[in-house]
Length: 327
Image (cartoon, rainbow, N blue to C red; front, side):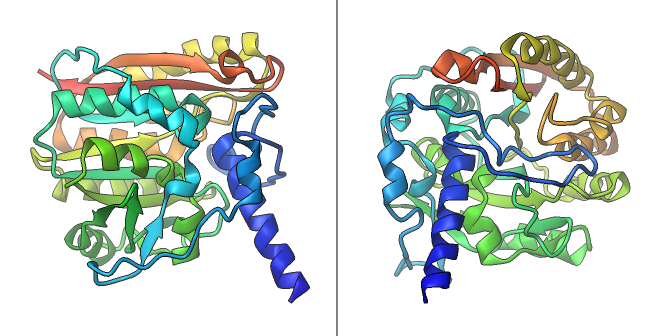
């Protein structure tokens, strides 16, 4: 019993470290993009350290859905989350069909501004496909897809079962465990913002293990064409440079921004945590655009870094958010 409790506490602490940036948690995988932001820059000035004393994921089963529901409010900082009420939408040229946003909730203002802007530009959306790193490398397959619905702020966000069936039938993704998606902040940290801005939308949660190969990501990207209609948006969940000094991180971000603008898969294939924790996801997005014959423009929405939020200047995480748009 004591050992079980210890394991549960360790899991909770690791998840909070990943989601909020409180501490460092060791990881070893360096395949593909070396993507993992489980180790986070220490943020000693964070106002919600005491949340670590509480359960991260209180048990919850919604009575009005047919399957268990993943509670996501444990991923957010309730103080920073209030920025969703004050962040205003920015102007976007063209129609956003895909985007990239951070999952480090230290920068909740960027999340709030991203989703407020998306809502203003695409209030017609009915489905968001979220492609995230599998930060804890817990998927049985390199590409996992979730089936459980989500809940945040008392609102249910349903998973699109038809889309899940399509991708699994095509053999490009395998159903992931409930535990994987309960812990995955690359998706869970976004859901509360989605629940506020798009309360009636469905999502397709996809988690990518770092050892995935390029051909599998290209297959996934091409398969997404079957889902991409005029009511669907593809969202890459990604933080950018990790663990570097502020100066080095900002220098790398200039390079990463040029990659986002060209969306050259060769760049993201070789990407490490020095640039992004979601390299494979961008490979899939590039393949999707190629399959559809699209050459969308990338427009940067925000660019920031954890040191601007009180974090260390020597061990940082940076953020670039923005949209790929068509005329």
